[in-house]
Image 1 (cartoon, rainbow, N blue to C red):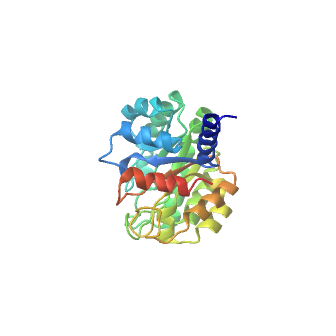
Image 2: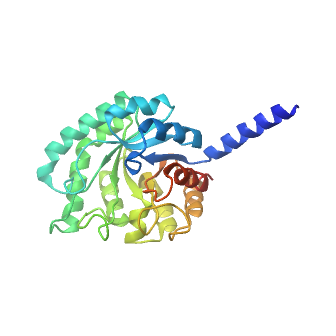
Length: 269
């Protein structure tokens, strides 16, 4: 084999290895000064599979680079979600439209939220979320789209948000009882609320459809400025044969593409 062929082979192997066992993606909102074209071009070169939290008019650009719009908006907002029955009719309407759009474009996931407590007992909020999500689970199942209820912290970023502990979210998942209604497990948020990330994920992986990353404290780079061992976490999730997306959702404090590339490399296991 000639030197050129050997080099080409090495590059091909390195590229294949960089993909790893996790389908990594990145949240669009974390890169406001980077054009979508630039983010997608660089992301594809790094071995990303998708772009998270994108609007409908951004889908063609993402597809152009061979990437998937890996999480799209559908129904509800962080403060106003499924935990109140008076929201259910509008949420159902919006969710059905979101699922229809996702299915038509062959997209995997739509995001949704519990809503804030506003004095509501957690048990009541849980039962309301179950009732509401049951109204749309069959449509999600029939169309092969996964509804992802996001876990967020109520301590630092989203005061009063109800789906702020894994146990509460899992209880909702058990009540809805659908392979197409899962949790969006945001590691940054759950590290703030409860820690014990690897054991919690391992015990509840069947209820998790998507992951987000972010360094604690500050939701910045996955480096030595914060407190988690991301390669260990990524390996633990990969070892569980997780088939969903593992999306980076941190706000870079350094050169954005350099920071993203470092995170992708770190979590390629």
